[in-house]
Length: 344
Image 1 (cartoon, helix red, strand yellow):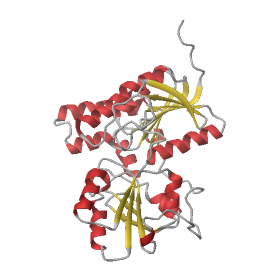
Image 2: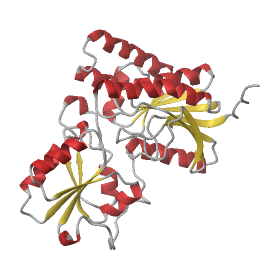
Image 3: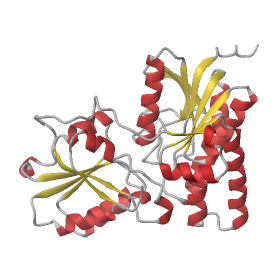
Image 4: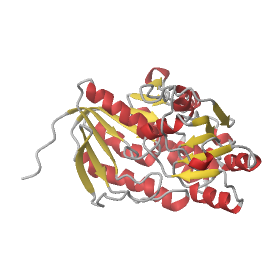
């Protein structure tokens, strides 16, 4: 006899990226799932084994095709992915592997009244949208990035035909959804230009947990970068070190301020981090420290020591629709923001 069907759930969230990974999407989706759970809804998640932003499956996770557990009171179905970071063929294989393996995850999940699909890539969105519509459910697609547009602008696929195929698939997915949500006004305008009806579109920008991030009078005994430099002004960048962020400018700033009582603290991971660490070493930048990713509550503690918070987006037309989520925790903590970018 086969496995009995799972009971119907109110919300099924499908996303390649989820806690315990660190990132804007992971924090936003985790908070959304927790709020739905606390409101009395049944919630399940289909996601990948955690590997972002290191590009390696996190220690302690078995590499089985499918594994199911309860995390923070929410049933989570995790599937194996080909872990990779950066760009090129390896990253495409990473995206494609989740798209394929998500079908196994969906088969282990309950039938859902609403399926919420995170769309960082078309590969990860196609299967769950097809699955949900085939089972008669309703679909919300959250468009966090203009992935196909970025692929087209970068020339990564090397020709017009592959890009045209992706655009047609993207249009098909967008028009099959009951609601499309977008995180920036630039993405909203782009999705409208792709033919999505305005009454099927909702602008739902990123935010911040103000219970976690808020001004404090006394920082207390926080782990600042070096007791011998405890009087230095700390400039904090906390987030992904990726190409889109253009963090070379932080190294330039550190070099210009090498003789000032200023220390740069870079917290996070990403495809560009090894190159940034190597560049800082070659340039002899003693006033910059790199740390591994930490949980949001630890970022909140670090912000209590910071004089300035940094956010940066590379100056490139393909990133003009970006709205850096890193500014929100810093602003909520009452810390001034230095922002480098030409974007929304």
